[in-house]
Image 1: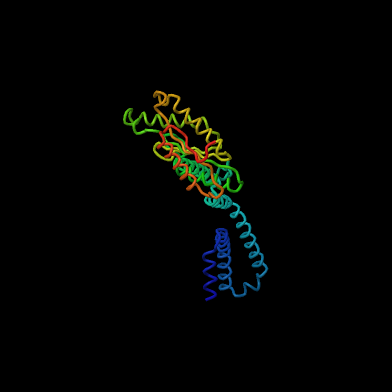
Image 2 (image 1 turned 120 degrees about the horizontal axis):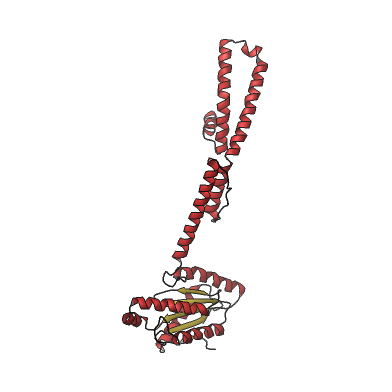
Length: 294
């Protein structure tokens, strides 16, 4: 049983280099062993008369095996580099910088793997971006907002800094679609997005969360500051031409809230903002509602 296990390990070595070693060993020693057996069978006194020659031959083959193994091991370096790079990319999504400039088959393999990983990385990034981007307005969608809002809320909780949320919904948007057509409605959404983006800072999160509903997350922003910003956007939208419609045709209602000390996720925060948004709708639209007025 022990002999079988040993043979099984030799037959299936765990490393690729181990297989190379076995190939080198058997490839050089089988001819030697065959020759010695043939010589001993033909002349039983051969071993006693030529033991020194056999010893030199054995040492030479051992040295040749070692040198062959080292050379082959060096030739396998690109395989090890590629294996490590693929594992690193799979685990950490870290794009490797494989050696370039080799002109043999190994160099071609390295070039192909590098280019394939670069194309794959670009494709995955584009897919991730597309999955989190609203195709019409080209801002974040609800999925994008969920992941990034949670990060900002956790940071506000950790640093004990204020964070506010603004929800706004376009007033009577269905009437705009019915009167002017869906193409004009799309142009309105794009125009509103462009205007609002111009009022926000790079640290603000802006996403389209529904048909005509949008959400803004404002880190390190007090309720007073958020209310002033929402009021500025509300008046700005109603006072200008959006998508070449007369001023006042496109208006929006806003709900503004600040994160409470015990709020650790977005759900209750956005639910309170949504309640205030509908309060603004019920109170006549085209206005800003907040839980605590400045």
